[in-house]
Image 1 (tube, helix red, strand yellow):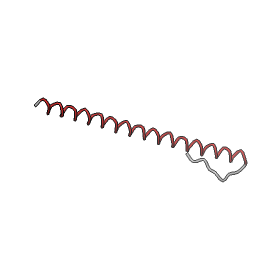
Image 2 (image 1 turned 90 degrees about the vertical axis):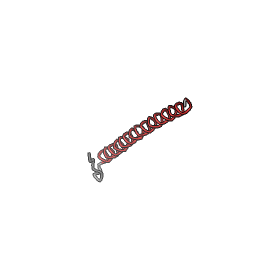
Image 3 (image 1 turned 60 degrees about the horizontal axis):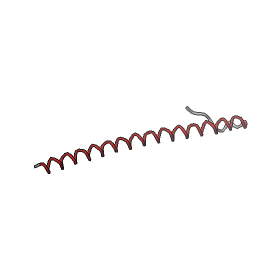
Length: 63
């Protein structure tokens, strides 16, 4: 009986660790997407500013 209880406890611990890992990965992916989107926006803004300084108007800054 004690062996079954220990196995059950171990299974619960593993499940909890797995759930925490999944949540951590989801948060990490969301942060990476956020930073990538920010990096792309900053690159686009910089390109628009470069075009404006060069006198070209073929890029438009869209928020």
